[in-house]
Image 1 (tube, protein in one colour):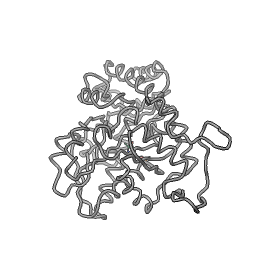
Image 2 (tube, protein in one colour):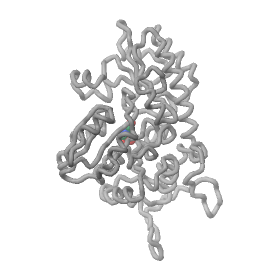
Image 3 (cartoon, rainbow, N blue to C red):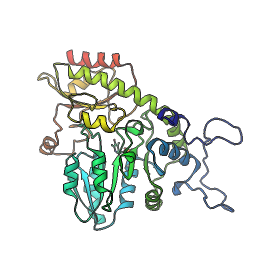
Image 4 (cartoon, rainbow, N blue to C red):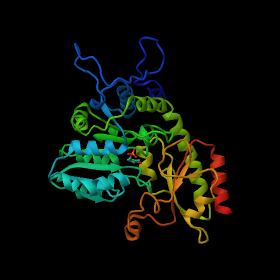
Length: 376
Ligand SMILES: *Cc1c(COP(=O)(O)O)cnc(C)c1O
């Protein structure tokens, strides 16, 4: 089946009593256990509402099994700690999501896990691998510079060397990119972003083979970061429109990126869908939609990035991303605020860099708003 059909139908557990067309919300935390070997319990990650969403995500990502978590970071941290042991080495991109970066720098040492950060480049990843490397963690496109890494090259290298590959696919969503099909072992999502899509719920997911999911499930039971039935239902409902939303958001983003790229007060625009963007060819080869995240430099001596944000009337200066409404922020003041100015400089996060998450509004209204804020 195609993505749009999977979004609507996959995983739905029809109500046997009423024959209603939606999965009912099963709130029980206790289930009769006699004469069955799959007794559900919320923290065992096997309740009917968890299963409905996992089954939908498995179809969309081409996974055998998966787990739903109470946040994206619960998914990232539990998957990581389920896959590595003291003495193991992890290779990570320095452009990984800020929370994942902090998880490594603030927690790994206490677990005896060794790690290094490398630039967003497959050869840099391969060069950083040591005999103790057991896990490679990548993201593409990255936040906020939208850098693209050759996913298949990383996966091909790791296969057969006893190294597990984990990819955070949040920015592309399962509609835009399927890392498992490119050879990656484990996909994680912050469902708070595109999967939920309405900036009103927090959740995460891990998707993989049956064997790897079982390893992570054992750790997940101990850490306990499972998702409740009502949020599972909201997520399942949201995902029915994921394909519609993501396609519209990607189309809007291309129009907005083209407008910005042609504007004299805007410097380089980082958007994988622009032919002149450095990662365009690679993105084209591994993504089916270029997504709705972009960043750009304001090229205007008389206006700071935050002054520009204050002049917008429709696009909201707010954190997070992936919702139906367009959101904008200055990474130097938000996600990368804790870095020193020198570290930011090295990472390419200038004070005039603006990150935009494009929603499903009419593209003409988005362009009008950006236009009036640039010209006022
Ligand atoms: C937001 C985000 C996360 C963390 O997700 P939460 O739901 O906020 O815990 C992880 N990875 C990426 C790429 C994200 O954008």
